[in-house]
Image (cartoon, rainbow, N blue to C red; front, side):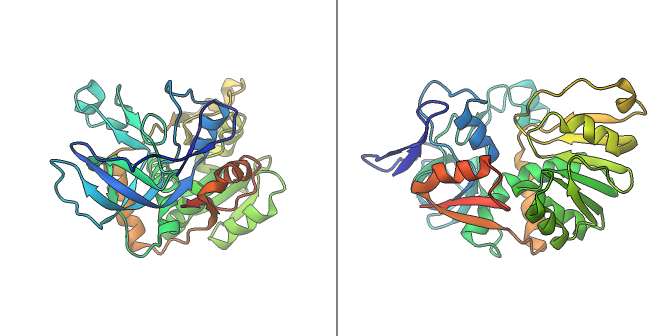
Length: 327
């Protein structure tokens, strides 16, 4: 069984496959054990990202066990537990790929978008783009590491050596990278939806020095701000919160329009940068960190058939931490 999106704005539909998907050359067939629900899935369901011309099985935070190997696969075996992330295939030949920037591949294909994803009992993935997962995390806890963790990590590294760090939007990605930041000695400020006492309490519980609404100013200027909420209006707010020379990192694949703002808010060598996708090197680096740090993953479990409810809860801000589907 799989949950399939047939048109933007419509609920996902249950579909039953006549047979399990089979791996081609260089691929592995996986029995899905858990799949995280990401805001990118919501953007796809709501039409912010275009469908690729055919119905889509979303889901790119897949944890599963390999059931079969395609021809030419080496280094993996039947029974191995692996994770499948957003980046599902790159050409290796375009200019970004040759420059070591595969996250910007001109012909990239993405899991749960161009490639059938993990809102299903079984999936197929390119063997080159799967990760071994730290054993300390169960299946439901490991799933959010594969996008919330990885994109959070890439955004975090783009903040450089910032000591006072602000996180705008305290959901799946922020609650993971917050723990890394605190463990590495950073002073953390968490900005949530105004009045979201639960998210602010979670942020403090995970070590934030300050937590409040996104309409509030930090108690001291930030060195950098990471924006995980897909709200363009947070960009000028974050610019006003960072010191001269500070960086604002936009970490989402989609964001509402950024409103105009005075040049004075950008002046002083402040920077706005975006994060696009991830690289396999990002995955290796973050999984190594996750293996060392006992990250607390706050996951809310949903049955696979309840994928629409999980998406609705995410849309309405009713999920604390991450939502995870379990077949």
